[in-house]
Image 1 (cartoon, rainbow, N blue to C red):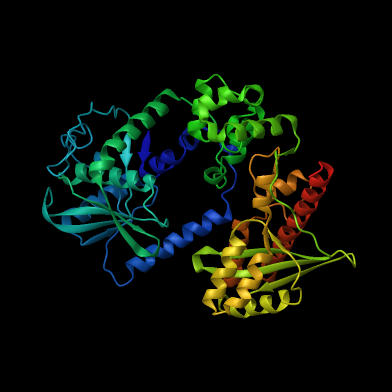
Image 2: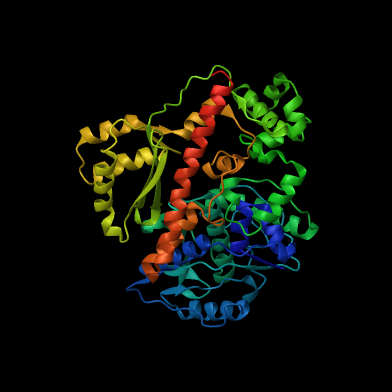
Length: 504
């Protein structure tokens, strides 16, 4: 069995994913999404920028030949290469007498933990790590008057726990290979922000994770499904896990039920939707706390009964006017670029709906697009501007600052912006698994013209447009943005009617 740093990274994010990668039916695994491929390409470019102007060595064996690459890496380390790119670390390449993996017991003089651990059961296990760089430092090792420190280059903006677990794993394997403990392992994050991993903290946690992961794999103990929209949406196993969760009416499909709350509900004997929906609020409060019990129960009731529930004493109203604007933005976070400002103009008096797109075909056109947008909405000074999320408000402020728009203009726009996400969450509870615009609109019967369209996919389309110049990609972006605007209009219309029907 091959246990790699990539596997541990995925295990830290989702144990079930690691299990399925080993034992799952590959036919259930969907094609990798374009957005993941885009992120991988961005990481390659990030690494290329870091390596630019540096001298480095690297193993050249086939990337699937782990043993060959590990052996070539060891040779380069023995030769004293200053920097090794894409090196492979595997303790199988050196003597089994080195202690760093067999026993994690106060490894190295500078590792201050006093905890002792039983030896890991590594029978039949090949451990392998692939740090982005191995960088030479002066000191003593099996190789001579030098040793190496591992560095991993990651796209994240912060040192996530899974990154630090991987760094600790790489440091541990490197200690086995070079016969000495290094004080540090490094991360280089997005925008080349360096970060030194505290190995004193993460080595004990690594031991726990290694033990748990090896036990799961040996026992073939398939972890339970738990759907987390933010973590799961890009996983290739998502559709498979989601279908299981739907069949089981799993509690993770209820907004507000986190893993810790799920465990508390299980311990209280509330194992499914019906149980949560029908129990007393007092019992729920004992399990998950008074601050969320009522909200979680109302959400479960809405799903079980498949109906919208008006919240008691609603404190919000939905403005209406003869002319209303529905506003949505497409943005590229990596470039800090808002490349499309879309506006649907609904004229109730004339019975018309017209979509207007302000599109930056090149990133440098953002300012011109912003100015065109301002001129356009100034034609409708009294019209409310409906949108879905806080992003549109923050973007108006950002673009105003960036392009030195008079503050008086921004102050005229901001009060007209109406966030329907906020309105929905304080007025109604809906029988949905999350409160994204797409989920709510789909529940109401609205469909996007391109079934695979999403915010992430729009970013990929735009990125490919800049590379390829295929205008069909621009048309796909425009369709998606227009559909977002129309979905917002659809939701607003339903919400107004629902409130009227329920006397609010």
